[in-house]
Length: 189
Image (cartoon, rainbow, N blue to C red; front, side, top):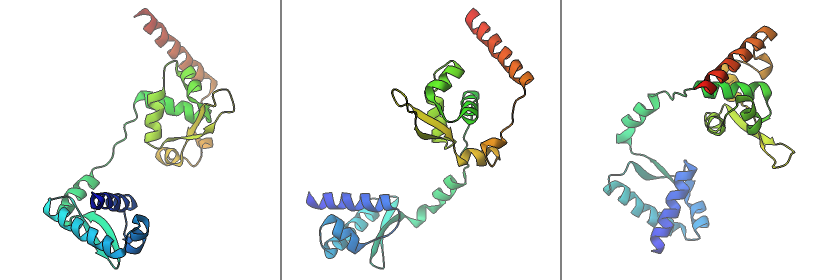
C-alpha cells in the first residue's frame, strides 16, 4: 500500500507541475531515496504503457515528466483548433455594462440597478475573465467589489474604461422609458 501512496503522490506532483521535476527534488519531497523514486517511476511507466493510457511518464536528464503519448497528438490538435466561444447573452452584457460603468461595484448594487438577482451572471463574467474581484467594501458584511479586467479591455478594444462611450441625456431618458415600459408589461402578465 505504501508504494501506491508514493505513486499517487508522484503522479499528483508531476501532473500539477506540468513540466519536468528533478528526481532529487522528488526524493526530498517524498522522503525516499532517488533510487526508490526511479524504481517507482519505472513501474509507473510500465503501467501507463500496458493500460493504454493517454499519458506516459518520461525521464529527461535526471528529471521526470508526465506527457501525452505521441500517437494521440492528432486529438490534441483537433481540440486546440476549436475556438472557445464565449457567448455573452443579453443578461451578461447588461451586467457587464453596469460593472464597467459603475466599478467598483458590489453584487447588491448591481441587483438594485437590474432589479433581479445577478449571481450567475457575475460568476460567468468572472469565469470569462472579463470581471474580477477588486476587494471588499468597508461596510457591514464586507461585500465583494467587482470591476473589469485587462481581458475586458482587450475584448472590447479599449485601452481604459475612460474610453467607454458616454451616453447623452436623451439616450438615458430613452433607455429609462424603455425599462419602465418593460416593467409595466411584466406586471400585466
